[in-house]
Length: 469
Image (cartoon, rainbow, N blue to C red):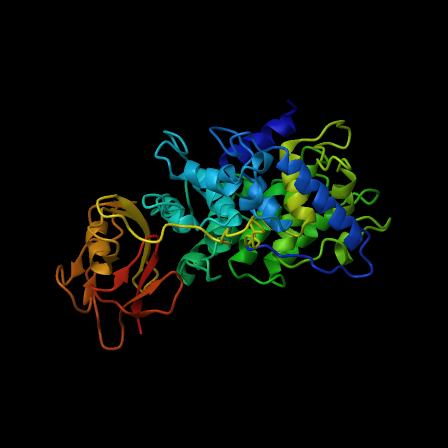
């Protein structure tokens, strides 16, 4: 295994957007809509061949679950992917069962395990916050919030954990299409993404913030694509200075003769795929303008040239003679116009819904809920709250009470008034209501309204509590 392949596989195993679909291409584009359609059809066929006999794509360790993001971008629903036509073993059901097990992902999980699962569950048509009565992937991500370094998820040295937190929390919307996390959290992550941008306009996998040597180091093509996408799905426009600088960095790495990006470890499909996915997520067409070389080539041209047809798999290096699963996933997702996840297509399997997810809490079964507390003075608390419900729903009061002793990280809630019963929440973490500035609550990205102890909370709800007018 080459050094580059090893690096890619390691990242895929531990790391994980709303997708931008290129439905029409301008006349100047070199890869025609017909060529892209053929690439998608053949690419999907190859990815289907990777499905195991039990219907699985994911398992312990390195696996092919990123196929779900590529399938969705290419217009194929995971529930329609079956081994030998056996619908009882469809890819979505098997994946959901895996994510619901207590043994998944491992005895020593890292934040990118949950971020990867969130992006792919969403693309497969599984609500990531409602995988099962006990599995809430959004809450799992929240538990890695760094209280001492606001805006980072997981150890800050592993910057990719924060990039993929942005991709997962913003890209995996509710089934109604609403971004479920509050603006204060989005802003905190964006601040860290910006602080880690290198002087050359790109990003790398490790932390650069506050380190002049790291900021001056050469950026990575792959992570630049991912960080661009992370900013854009967080609401940063493509005209923003940091996006423009990242775009210029990628342009500077174009190989005129092929349209490929020259990555740190050489030209390859995975790096190209991540860069194109970043451009897609930002609504930047990778086939025109800055990404059409003087010799008439684009990054999409390069990717299609890497594909074996009619087999449909993509090779990792131009010199390879056989396809790679990971290159085929990254290549197809990019050619299909996707970012790092995509809204699941409507299934063609009769009776199969677009979305599946747990609908109620299960009394006596411990669950987790994602909670943010914003005191209006710039002190944002983020945590995963564990509680065992006594019915099919719970209340905001019960969640806040549980957070005082069963939150990860700890300290999210230190006290709530009143401490029992019903009625308006008058104080939280020692801060009391004052005039029109009161504690308000939002659920799953909805409008903020007055917070009361009796507010009904359902399975998988993402809860944001905020003090202010």
